[in-house]
Image (cartoon, rainbow, N blue to C red):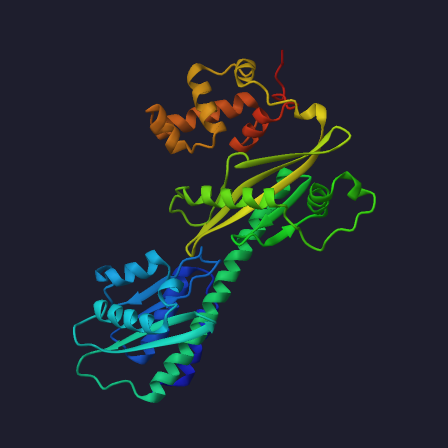
Length: 378
């Protein structure tokens, strides 16, 4: 019989974790109270975990399960959409990852929301007694509490991302700003961006009697650009480093529409992602500005800018690749030079342009009014 006091203490320990590693270890100590010789838990996919399911196991053989690989490859929600097919698939997975052949097994499915559930697979040695109803009920309740703890952990990491994102965005000082999640839902937008989108839809006359919606209503052109940007993001190889923020180098999509009196509403769509141990969560960062006609006459010719910055031939080649968003590793492969050499060239380019980041360098090259600070122009 399980002692409830140690179980409550272990569950409290799980709830206090703020990292995936600590969460997994606390979860193992909790389920150890049930004297299992192996267990596996599949947490539902979520936006917070990068849209993927999370597998945590102890004393099981997940590497030997092609069916488990199928769950993650095809998408867990799609696989379990048919309850009968899902039950059959889980039974096969349970047999494949069992600690030893003939283990006594119990599969528990804990519903969080419609068609989204946690799966807990518990094992005992072949000769051990079967799970009695009280144990099944207690394991189910424990699984439900573990799932709630995981949701808190995911939300905490999401808040960490948003805090870092807004600090970064604050340094960019955009006139109009909007952040969208993978479902194109607005997480944050300022009043300027709502004004710009309102005028994009209704023209400059909308400013005379402005009645702003409560949240951003993206025009079709912007929505299409966001969808294309998400597709672009899916092709990005994100390094396996926890706690890394990824921002596209310059706008993935640029949009412009005449506003009136020779002015234009200009906008850019960038992909933004934050990587933690729970996965990579993609977002869109939209910026907008109203620009006079004379500021949109075209970008500075790069050959001229390279001459002003006194870039060498090799630095010019690197700079052109930076402008199309190539990562340092891709640049090295393209030019057949080592990664440290690429990084050295990039530092020299940024120093000559008197900017701190590649993003600022892209802005310098694409804004016709910007000039390299502290350097003469012809």
